[in-house]
Length: 131
Figure 1 (cartoon, helix red, strand yellow):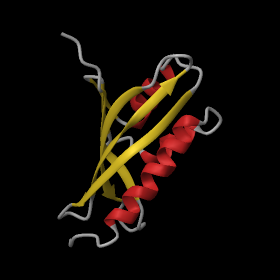
Figure 2 (cartoon, one colour):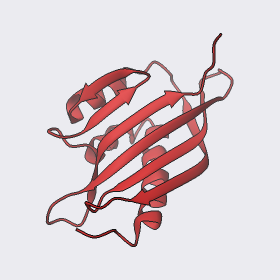
Figure 3 (cartoon, helix red, strand yellow):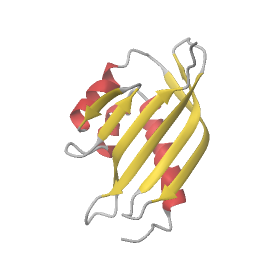
Figure 4 (cartoon, helix red, strand yellow):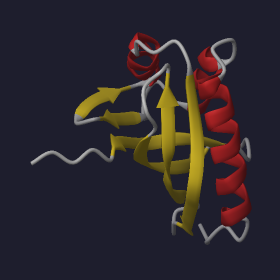
């Protein structure tokens, strides 16, 4: 495969859609459509989950009632296998807690014969520093 010339536009569109679904409790379950049962992985604050069903169990187990992501920067790179590497920097606010900075990295891989992508890798970490 060759490098995808639309990687930047695809990355920014994906990020906007992903967080709009995540932030809306009525549409949060739609995030399952981004993941693959046999080849998606999530690392969330050091815990690892494999497959769409385990990833969605983790997402649905989060205890906040309200969440809002504010995106500061989206950096993307095309991958030689047709995938896209995406790094997201931003802040999130849950319930009445103060905003926290976060970093999330995605690797999107092309779905064979569909022209669409799925999240193969998703690494999320709050930017909390403790001494």
